[in-house]
Each structure stands twice: as C-alpha cells, then as structure tokens.
Picture 1: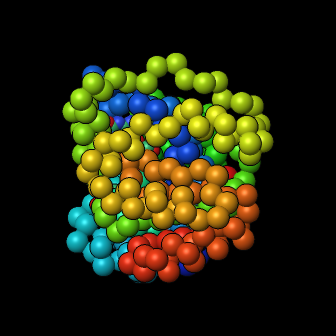
Picture 2 (picture 1 turned 60 degrees about the vertical axis):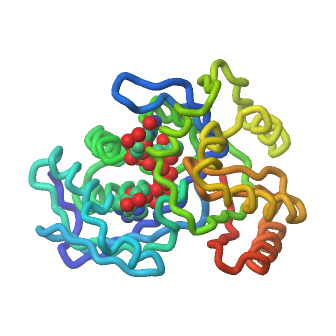
Length: 295
Ligand SMILES: C[C@](O)(CO)[C@H](O)COP(=O)(O)OP(=O)(O)OC[C@H]1O[C@@H](n2ccc(N)nc2=O)[C@H](O)[C@@H]1O
Ligand SMILES: Nc1ncnc2c1ncn2[C@@H]1O[C@H](COP(=O)(O)OP(=O)(O)OP(=O)(O)O)[C@@H](O)[C@H]1O
C-alpha cells in the first residue's frame, strides 16, 4: 500500500451537516433497520477534523460541542478508523482533532459527518482511492448515514443508507435551528412504529431531473419527512421551532431534518437566511441557530 505522506503532515477535512430535505420510511427490515428514500443535501456549516498520521489511534476534542462528547466511549471518528483498520492491513492511523460545532443527536448527521471525514483523512494518509470499496464498507459498518456523508454531495439515499444516487440540486440559503433538545434516532423509529394507524409510505412522486428551485419545492411539498410526526411526540418544542421559522420573511419550506430535533428553513438567498437567523436568535437566544448555504 503506498503511504503518500510524511508522518509530520497535518491533514484537514470539513465535516458538513447533512440535511434530509425529504425522508420517506418504506418499511421495516428483518434486521430491525428501516428502508428509506431520502433526498439529502449538505450545508456549508459543519465540524472540522484534522489528522496527524502515525501508528497510534487517538482523538482530541475542541470547540463548543467538546464537553458533550467528552464522556463518549466510542466516538464515531474512532469507530470509523477501527472499521477501516479492520479492512486494510497495516493502515496508518494517527491523532485526530475534532472541532465539534454541530449539535449532537440533532438530525444533522454530525457524528456521521465526522466519521466520513475520518475515513477521507485516512484515505489521504494511506494513498487509498476515494472509491475503494473498503472505505464504503467501513462507512456502512459505522452508521447508516456515513455512506452518504462519505459521498458528501447532494444525493438520493435509499436502503438503510447504503444506496447512494447523485442528484443535481439547486442552491438555497438556509437556516438550521436546534432547540437544544437531543433526540435519539432509534427512539424516533420506535415511536413511528407505535403511532396509531401508522402505515409505511408507498410509491412516491418521481424526482424531477435537475430541478429548478420552484420544481424542487413543488416536489418536496408532496414528499415529507415521515419521521417528523413521531419526533414531534418526543419533542413537542418542535412546534415552537416551526412557528419561529414560518414567521421569518421569505421562508419557502420549513421542515425537520433526519430524526430531529433540528428544523431547517429554505430561502432564495443567503441574505434572507441571515436576516431570518437574526430574527430567530433574537426571539430564542437559547437555541442553536445557524445561517448557511444548502445544496
Ligand atoms: C434518520 C437518518 O438520519 C436519516 O438520514 C438515518 O437513517 C439515521 O442514520 P444513523 O444515525 O447513522 O443511524 P444508525 O446509527 O445506523 O442507527 C441508529 C438506529 O436508528 C434506527 N435506524 C437507522 C437507520 C435506518 N435506516 N433504520 C433504522 O431503523 C435503528 O434503530 C438503529 O439502531
Ligand atoms: N463525533 C460525534 N459527533 C456526534 N455524536 C457522536 C459522535 N461520536 C459519537 N456520537 C454519538 O452518536 C449519537 C448520534 O449523534 P449525531 O450528532 O450524529 O446524531 P444525529 O445528528 O441525530 O444523526 P443522524 O442524523 O445520522 O441520525 C450521539 O448521541 C452521540 O452519543
């Protein structure tokens, strides 16, 4: 295996937030996971990860989210690195430093983005090509959202997260709002199954090829996030978040991402998104509010 870099090199990767613009739950599988169909976009906002390549694997945490993860026995960065080491004999590892900015357990796939960034860094440190099947397998072994985060661009995510089809999406200004309520993904899927009269999504509207903003918004109007109703039962504050975002000027769509509790709103441009973010922060100073670009 070619080791492309000197051991002293410090490598950096962005770990952008994942936003599920739509998320249909198609059924429960024999392995306990659910088959999904989700249009995924990535934000300008995210965590940052660096790697100083070396023989020993370690992780240092910094940034506003560091205290939340300090007690985490199995950070997804380390889990991903071990998953790749199990598949690539003699893998060069090293010291990771994670600048944690995204809220944790928030539906933004922050941990998955960090894991994917770890795999990209290890690929660079070891001279692996990005489409090496072992990177994909290590991603999937780390978590359902990690393959999409490894791809890192707008896509249709299917299966439990392993089937990725690239999608061309228009760019939007966006505001991400998390009311600082952590929601566990497994609990939201459990609550979905318990909802009275619950039935899985079938069919679905065909995705328009290279949609304009208007065409994408029309499509999203009939393709919701099926995890939003059960998440609202677990986190009723989502109603307040929705009201705060709907009240901003120019919001084209207000919706929850992933299993929540982050909601996003889409705007025609970054200026409208920035104004909306200021308004929400002013009214709710305790919430995590981020103005960004999406798509
Ligand atoms: C909800 C999404 O964020 C949408 O992008 C993802 O599907 C969740 O991805 P993730 O956080 O990487 O999820 P994992 O760590 O693989 O799984 C956490 C738990 O969520 C449930 N889970 C997750 C993904 C999936 N397709 N079906 C599921 O039922 C399972 O109970 C699983 O034990
Ligand atoms: N680097 C990490 N960043 C965030 N969470 C991590 C990390 N490593 C491990 N975790 C654990 O993973 C759990 C899920 O965190 P994450 O922030 O990825 O959730 P999420 O945004 O809801 O993910 P998804 O949208 O993929 O369901 C957390 O509760 C935390 O205990």
